[in-house]
Length: 339
Image (cartoon, rainbow, N blue to C red):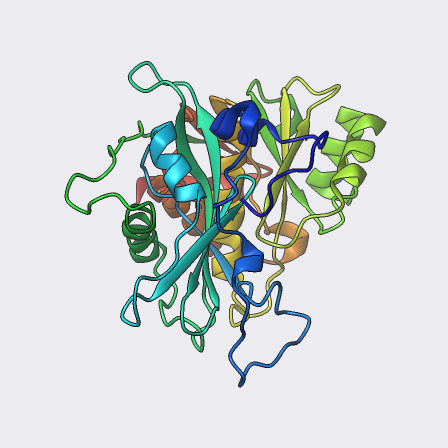
């Protein structure tokens, strides 16, 4: 954890679930424990606590692992490299694990955890969102999210101090039913609908305006309280006057010829939305055709990314519905589903 809370400080639900009322031990490593930056990088505003944050985050599927409370506590205590051959350091801040290269102090992974109650493992913890550095000067993983996720799983095992062979249990999530329909997203009978938002999460035109109008002014107030959302990320609010219990807001990329990371960002919108749906316990979700229409993303390519990303992402959802605004869009999504 970043710091042991001062007496009387309000602690998060995650911290309470992990540590109980006694809080984290004084020996838990935190950001402040890394006291030197490489001289060639200097000490600019991007150097937080003498470790460098991820410069160009790419969302990846979180590993399908569950940790016991004891395993999670070991992970949350942080990890200090044992010798010069050990390439990693790690620390936690509340529910976020940060994994950095030990020599350069560059951030490579960031993982958000959630506490779960399972029949076979009470007080379980699991990753629900993950990001990797895609800046090739820092870590040359390229844009292979599956490879990055597999390495992340190995690193979580490594930095938690657990042996590599008897790894934590792998839970295979059920595959949701994917379907494409022609219709109005605000009229869908689902637990959550996805709002294709701008970074301010304010009402726009088209689908965005329709969702805000149907949900009522309470939705705009809740969005403003979130303080915005970077492109490729997602946040969740109640649905207010909508039939859907939840609205998941994701800031979608515009099309710039496909050379400015648009595919990676669009994939991230879908993965992040699924992660937020899992966090609130949704079982059914409806997506519009993200980034098409006014955002200009080519329809066939957007549909392929949507379907491929949902199929490759672990989720607890039972049904994922793509709600298409016209027949060309429906044809594109149906073709992607059949492909």
